[in-house]
Structures are given as C-alpha cells and as structure tokens.
Image (cartoon, rainbow, N blue to C red; front, side, top):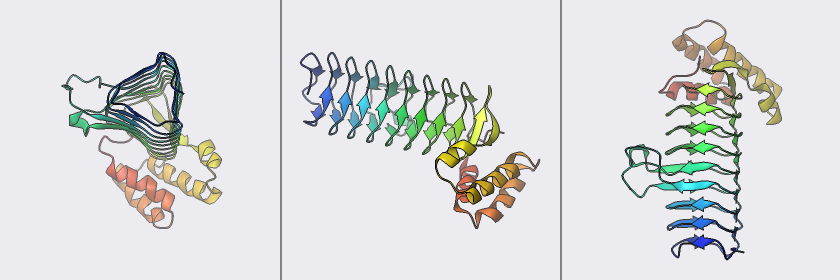
Length: 256
C-alpha cells in the first residue's frame, strides 16, 4: 500500500497497514502507526511519531525543523496521536530545546487546510482548527476548543477547553474554558452556548457557567474579587472549578 513513487528513508518505521501516496517523502526517524493514510506529495521529517488511523492530505509538511532562530539542529520531536485528520497544506513543526523539545498533537483532532502549528505547541483532543488558523510557538490548546478560520494565536497563549475563537480573531492572551471570543484584538462575547449544548452539557451546568462568566466579565469586579466569588460556586460545580483553575494558573493573563 506504499506507492512505488514515494520516497521512504530506510530508518522509517512504518506499519504494514499504512497507505502512502505517490511522491510523498518519509524521512529518517519517522514512525507511522497502523491504518494511517498518507496522501500524495506529503513530506514528513523526523524525529516524528504518528499514531494509528490518522489521515494526512496532500502537500502537508509534518515534522520539519522549528521556525525559530534559536534552533541549532537538535533532535527535537513531533508527536501525533490517533485518528486525526490533517488537511491540505498544513504545517506542523517540531519542538525546540528551549520549549521542552516536543510539539504534541493529541487524538481525534480536525485540522483543516493551511493551518500552521508552530514549535512547542501542545494540542489536546477533539479540537477543530478551521482553514488558515495559525499558532505561534508554545501555545496550548485544550480539549474540544474550536479555532475559526484565520484565527491567529500569539506565542505562549493558552486556549481553554470548549472555548470558541470566532473567525479572524487575534488572540493575544489566554482564553478561559467555555468562553467565546471574537475580534481584533479578541474580546470576550459570551459563553460558548452552542458548543456546550452540542457537547450535551446540562442546562444546570450551562446556567452555572453563565453565572461564572458574568462574575468575571459583567459585574465590574476586580479580577481578584471575581476569583473569590467563583470559589464559592466552584465548590458545588466541577465545571466551574475547571473555569476557576484555568484563571488561577494563567501566567499571560486572560482576555478581558
């Protein structure tokens, strides 16, 4: 199932059930798991580890060196989990020594055409990247987050679980879980109501999260006072606790 026109480095470890299309290039120190499909004209460089049942479409560039002037040829790593869809012209770079040495993509992510994921980014599970979304280095994307088309995320930002960044948003600070942001520069709009309902959150949980959002963004409280109030409702609602914990560990500061 490897097209004879593909170029495969002898050191690459490729499961016998992998499909590789014509003119794709698989470099040294690449591992590809079972039932993964690689289209034509894909370039994968190592060290890169790709799990099972991924689909990588034509003209994607996977595992090339980081676009970072500090990079000096070190053997850093790209890790990709299982059942991801990576569409045309996507670029995903390896990590840097200064950033921990690894770029990591989790499982079941939907990554559309022309997406760029830079060095040392950590992407969770079940995320969606619409066309042309781009991450600078050292960005963390938590589970079930959605980035609309042309979203730009600055370096070292964290995007919380179940959050939604609307089309062409420029994200320069952390986006808390469950929050919808939009604009240039991105500002909070509301909780991600549609996303939460699609994910089968209960109406009670949504009501609690909406109250948490209002405490943070609508009541004119200082950040420290918002945290105090959020701790009270987080004691009885684990989803609000997730919201609160994200706020407490934010180093870059949150979008406000």
